[in-house]
Image (tube, rainbow, N blue to C red; front, top):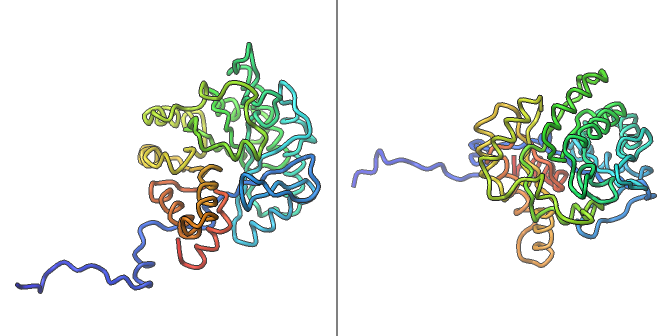
Amino acid sequence: MDLTHRPRRLRRTDAIRRLCRETRLSPDALIYPIFVDETLSGVRPIPSLLGQNHYGLDSVCRAAEACLGQGVTHAILFGLPAAKDELGSSAWAEDGVIQRALRTLKERFPELYLITDVCMCEYTSHGHCGVLRDREVDNDRTLNYLARIAVSHAAAGADMVAPSDMMDGHVAALRAALDQAGLQSTAIMAYSAKYASAFYGPFRDAAGSAPAFGDRRGYQMDPHNAREALRECALDAAEGADILMVKPALSYLDVIRTCADRFEAPLCAYSVSGEYAMIKSAAAAGLLDEYRAMCETALSVFRAGADMLITYFAKELAEAIRRGDIG
């Protein structure tokens, strides 16, 4: 047999593996979630999210320091207010928990790029993402309140606002309100394809945002639908979204791939609390290697086409990138 011209595979030395990687990661593409609790002094572990914490307004700078120390320069803030009401009015208050956190962080760490969650579920007494009419979310009325929240966040120092409410027309409403307030440079990251997922449980516990009745399937996407994600992304892009998002990540890698191929706008994926908790719990039970599982799942999201990733593993992934294990 003449083997002179046979195809050859690369010898898998470490140097060659790293040189020839098709998918490359950077700490700049990682976004870390930070929970700020208005009632808290200091730091409190979150039982449902092992390794994650609630931070008080007096300690939120510690979360920022930990991110920047690992080279993670982007964070998204979620607020736990001291008081809730039917309208979620503390969400747009000048002295609200997120507004105060923004001013503190921007003064101390101007290099930290701050994104804020724009939604009402953490602030309403009923736990739904908008104002209600007869126990149903009133989409159009909600838009006015979401716009007020976005403007208040941007005025307090947010670099980007991220509406996670899934109301129709929310991106257009936020863009118009921000522009009218002279905040044209504030970017919008739209939760464009946000599915009604079983993987949100630990977050809802951490944020105190579980609905008091019913569920959110009326305004979040049906997990059966992929083409709908394209329609939602197209609407948000047309309304002026700077970044589109698919959430959750691991169960929707096909949607990430399809959206990445279809749209020119940068695409974010959100590796949600349930995905994080599965890895942590399985590792704690000795069923898998947490570090390798963390790296492999993050790689899968970027390989599918995401340009950036919101993840509770952001700091650990940044370290893995520096070590050359991923990236």
